[in-house]
Structure formats: structure tokens, C-alpha cells
Amino acid sequence: MTAHLDYVLHLADNALVLGQRNAEWCGHGPILEEDIAMANISLDLVGQARLLYQHAATLKGDGTTEDSLAYFRDVPDFRNYTLLELPHHAALVGYAVDNRDYAVTIVRNFLYSTLMALVWEKLQTSQDEHLAAIAAKSLKEVRYHLRHSHDWLVRLGDGTEVSHAKTQAALNHLMPYTQEFWSASDFESHVTSAGIGVDTATVRDDWQTLVNNGIADATLQQPSTEGFVHTGKHSLHSEHLGFLLAEMQSLARAHPQGVW
Amino acid sequence: MSQATPKALNEWPLWEVFVRSKQGLEHKHCGSLHASDAQHALQMARDVYTRRQEGVSIWVVPSNTITASAPDDKAEFFEPASDKIYRHPTFYTIPDEVGHM
Image (cartoon, rainbow over all chains, first blue to last red):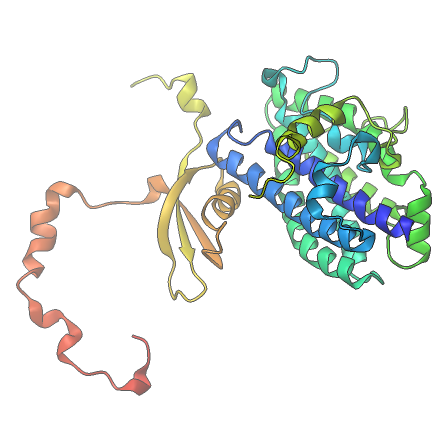
């Protein structure tokens, strides 16, 4: 049961943290139309997170609500991939708003959407009927996110000299974080054997093929995937998640009984 | 010949967007947007103009391919029709079986 709950929270935290990150572009997008597109994607992700938190709250019981899970848990409780909490910055630059790099946003969305297009597809046949229903809804959304990010990956990669260099740098920066997708965890092993969850190892080849094709379409070089294997899903995070949660949770924590 | 400014070179072309609603029989003009090419414009139109379930089909057309009538031509273009009321089909009753016309 704990594994089941942890798995649903892992999926929910992934969606919420990336949704919150991408929402940072709201009002600051490169152009108006793209600003709206990115806000749409964020809203899809936050919508997925809400359904998953509502489901997790039912599994947990004890007066838990979607809001208590999203706003009143701290960094060591979150189970999202580290990839999703990183700021929109290339490696080794400052964290000023001006340093945000849209190539990082696009590459991350591409790597994660590719994974989730495969995972949601399989989760449609989960033994957890509620999760299967959420998967069917989320699959349509993530297919669009994948289309959007793949489209931009090619435009930026196969664009100007500057956009190519930035996109390659973003890919080199983020690709090592994808190792976490395939690292084993107890809660994932449990839900997989119970027929509730998906063993990500079974979608790894498909993911690699789709990602390789995207990299080739964008005329980019295959980056190294070596290095430290990150541990966000084990609740051991980078320094960035705390700042993200502080901003996201501050309103709910300042007004704990607030209703809106 | 005026020299293209760097800004003009960076500006994406304008597209007109037409959306057909679920019950609608034809695509209706709903606005315009900037995009780098047709596919891009289609995706942008999806995000900008169909977020509230406005449609089930989208057309995008490059704005510069539309030839428009000039406001100055209004008198000779449109006013001659104003006294030819017999051209309105309201003089005829349409049988129900015909359906939508």
C-alpha cells in the first residue's frame, strides 16, 4: 500500500514540479503565442497533478487532501525526478531571471514528454482503474507536449548557429539526469509486480529510439549520459527544489485555512 | 528600395486563423497570429484560439495572400446592391425537407 501511494505521489510530484517550473515563463515567454502555448502545457501538467493528488489523498485517507499533499509537504517528501526541478538555465550560469534559456525548457520537455507518452500509454491498463483513467486523459495531453517540444527541438537545433549551440549545450547538460528514469526503486518494483505501475525498463528502448530520432532531426550530437545518477524519486533532491516549493507553497502556508 | 531592418528580418509572418466549431458548418475567421511557417502557425492557433473548446478544425492562411477590397471602393462595390431587395431569398418559403441552405 505504501508503495502504491508512493508511486502515485511520484507521478503527481513529477507533473506538479514541471508544471510549476514551466509556469515561470508565463508572461515572460519568447513571444506571445509561445507564452500561451507554454502556459497551456503547464496547466495540463497541474491538471494531471491534481487528479493524481486527489487519488493519492483517497489512498492515504486520514483527512488528506490534494492541497495538503501539494502545499504542506517538504523537500524530503517529494518524489519527482531531479531533472524536473532544475531551473531553466544552462549549466554553469547564474540563476538570474535573465539567464533563463528556452532551449533548456524545450529539451527537458522533450526528454520527459517522450518518457511519459510511453508510460501513460502502458498505465492505461493498470490494475488501479483510477490511475488507468488518469493515464488515458494524460496520454492525449502528453502527446501534444511531445509534438510541441519535438517541433521546437528541431527548429532550435536546426536553426541558427547560436540556437544550435544553445540547444546542444542544453542537451549535454540535461541528458545525464535521464539516467534516473531507469534506476531501480523499491516502490516501483512493488507496483510493477502488482500490475499497478510500469517498469520503466520496458520502455527504455522505445524512449531511446524516439530521443535519438529527435536528436538526429535537430542535427544535434548525441550527448554523454554518464555521470552521477540523480535520486529525486528517492526524495534526495538538488538544492533547487526548496526554492521552487517555497515560492509555490508560500501563499497556502501564509493562509492555511484559505479557500479560493 | 528600402533596406530591410534586422527587426523586420526577425519578425515572423502574419497568419489569419479560421476555426470551425463543433456545430459550425463553416470555418470562421477568429483572429491572426505570428508564426514562422504553416505547421507552426497551426500549432500556435491550436494554443491561442482553441483553448476553450472553440473548435474541431483549424485553417491558417498567410495574411499576405489575402487580397482585400479597398475601403475607398465601398460606394461602387457595395452600394448598388442596396436597392435590389428582390435578391433576398426571404420571398420564398423553403420546405422543411430541404434542411439547411
